[in-house]
Structure formats: C-alpha cells, structure tokens
Image (cartoon, rainbow, N blue to C red; front, side, top):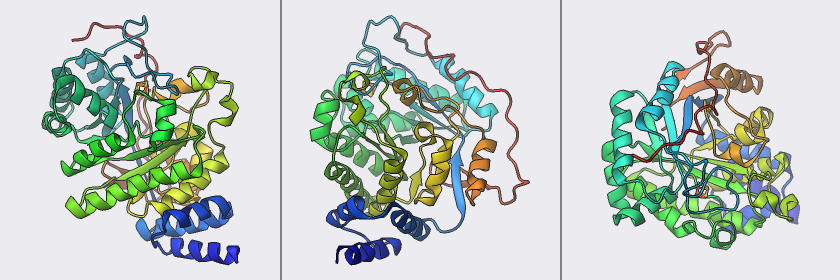
Length: 399
Ligand code: SF4
C-alpha cells in the first residue's frame, strides 16, 4: 500500500506536477534514492529540457570580513578591532575584477560581514566604480542580511536601500544567509541574524525591483526534515507570489551541507559529529528540491563543498547547472579544510561531458552565452591565475 502510494507520487513528480509538503516529506523519508533520482531527472527535463548543462565564469569577492553577528557556523568573520580584520579599497577590488575579465568572466558575487561603521556611500561608490571601470561584469552583491544591516544602520527602508544600490550598478542579490528558513534553527545557530520572514521580505523587494535573485540552503545543523520542508515551502510560496505579481522569481536554487571544521564554533562542539550531511544525503536532498521547487527552473551543483565528482554525479539527480568556475571563494572555504577551490572552464567541460551532457556558458540570469556542442569546441586556455587567497589578509582603514 505504502509503496504504491510512493510510486504514484514519484510518477506525479516525474511529470512535473506539484506535490504537497506532506507528499514531499513522504518521498524524502521513504523513497529509494535511485527512484528519486529518476523522478528528479524527469522533472528537470520538464523544466529545462535537453542535454545542456550550464555554468558561469565568475569570482566571489569579499569586501570586508568585519562582522558583528557571530554566527556559530562561520569561520570567515572577525569582530571589529580584531587584528585580522580588513576592508578592501575600490582599487583592490578592481584589480581582482580585472583578473576575472582576463579569463573571460562575466559576473562577480560580492559579499561581506555586517560592518558596523562603513558609510553607505562606500557601497554605492564601490558599485559605481566597478560599473564604470568594468562594464562587462555583472555585479551580484549583498545578501539579504547585509541589506537589512544597511537598512538598520542608515535608517532607510529595504526598498530605499535596494533602489539606491540598483541605481549605482547592482544587478542582483546572492541568496546567502538563508541557511535554514525556520526560526527554530536560526535562533539556535545564528541568533543575531535576521529571521526567516526578514530574509524572505528582502528577496520579495529585490524581485519586485527586477533584480536577479538566487536561493540557497545549508543542511546539517541538526534540523529535521520538517524544517527542511518549511524552507522549501517558503521559497516556493514567494516564487509563486513574485511570478504572479511581476514575473521575476528566483533564478536558481543551490544547497550544500554545513562545513564545520574546528575553524567554527559548531565545529568545536561536542555534538559536531551530528552536523553536516553525507554525499548520499546531499543527492537525496537535491532530488527533493527539484521535485518540490517546481517553480524554480535551475538547480545548481555545489562542487565547492561536495567535490567535482559528486557534483558530476548530481547531474543525474535533477541538477542542470554546474555553478561556476569560482576564481575565488573565501567564506565556505574558511569553515572547512575540505572544500574545493577554483576550476577552469575546461575542467567543468570535462565533468559535464563525461556525465553525458553538453556544456554551455551562461550569464547570471541564465541567458546562454555559448553552447559547446562538439568536444573539439573548447574554451580558450586562460592565462595563469592568481592565488585565490593572496588578497584576503590586507588590513586597511575604512574609506
Ligand atoms: S555568516 Fe555572515 S552574518 Fe554570520 S558571522 Fe559570518 S559574515 Fe557575519
């Protein structure tokens, strides 16, 4: 009886039909992983038909590591006054964007901690500077919790903050800081960070202003499947609302397991063995994401945390995007010794082709820039790349 019900749900999921949270939870708990993979792959074909797997050439840049929010899973931040704090100048950030231009990149993803003292014109000035000097590079910057920090610091509404940032050159908001969109978990692991409603509200405003937005999720804080399903439903409900209101919802979803080496408070906890998630749990989770988030078109692999090989396998579990080359990444990698740094376009091509798919380069809104139909059709070899860690310990006085 139960297996017949699960088969029926898998069939409906394969056809791209909407499942209720209760139905999704039943699949999450009971369905065989390979059956889930087949259903998620079929649902992927409903939403993004064909053999194309996309990727982006980009760089993550962190303008400051100063933060007053002290999340227990974060190894990146330093409190104000700490000897290792830094704030980057416009010119230092510009140098790194120039390196991205040299490898034919198209997007930077720029985030920082919650700095208590920088003036608002540091952010608008930085965006204007980058737009003026590197007009070919799209700027996705400032996750919802940073936007809320700006709103509180400068006495502006969320809408006013986003409007001014957009006018200065902001193209989109990364989905960072979502972790688990359930306040029971947020209160435990990041009590000073914005609550789930506030994260959703910033994204609602960003979507109304036609900014590009993506959704993220981190699993393995000790949450149960109900918390995870709540997260999916918050994203699905907002996407329904935004698509109906103005046609601009989340472009993509990406999830990864909590990284928790001894560099973070959670990694030093006596319960640390219970945190994080195995590759099998990760694949299972992404299948459920593909099935439940039926109004978000693209699912990204997280090869930075899962490794290139699991990232490759995930293409058969509902994922249609390999993420990006990551010329630089400092936040997730400073919570663990086990993350992966930087791949070339050719590396990504090899992974995608070996999995039976066709690589295509995209922009931040998933417009296709180039399809590489033939295996002989290779991207240019990039010039030697700089060390991704070489620029992150500079100390400066804030502008
Ligand atoms: S995760 Fe973000 S908000 Fe939390 S401590 Fe780290 S930098 Fe600050």
